[in-house]
Length: 233
Image 1 (tube, rainbow, N blue to C red):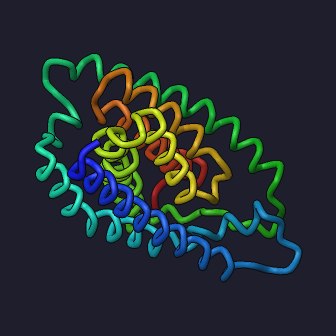
Image 2: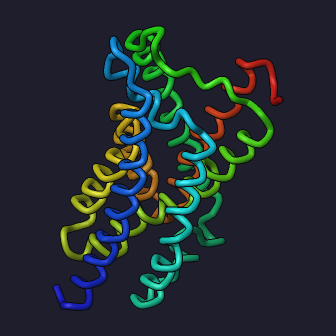
């Protein structure tokens, strides 16, 4: 291991840790602010993103502010970020891995929905906001920004930079723990889904295979709320 690789790994880990602590810290403050006597842990967690517009704005700003540093890191290492995301010669195969990972992620999401339904009381926050403005904010923050940027930070950084120091598998698992910490309010769903997305990423070698299920799960969640609420508006 040379000094350059160590410094690149250190920078990658720092960027991802800053993102994790900043967003998770906001979520904790929101959850605490929504606390009412009699709530259980599942109820409290529902308030982590109860103000969805503020939450989406935080996600967008945090991810996009750090993105230039990520691009610079890839440039300094001589690694093409574009090719790490996708390459024309393997795009069909990579999309298939992504779709397979999305299907598996949705099965886990369905199982978690039963756990949450059983664990939450009448004091839990129920998101029923399907206004056009909030839906657009969700699409930008959860589908595009999270689906692309988070995969660069939590999967791409691990493989491209920290893998040379810790080993690829250890690095991916470490960053998956950070990923789960950022989404602590879903009680491990992000960790389990992240393992599936790691599988897809390692099988294809391109981040498009983990971006598809990440964005896809969030997109399905948005459309599910719209359908259950009777439409946008």
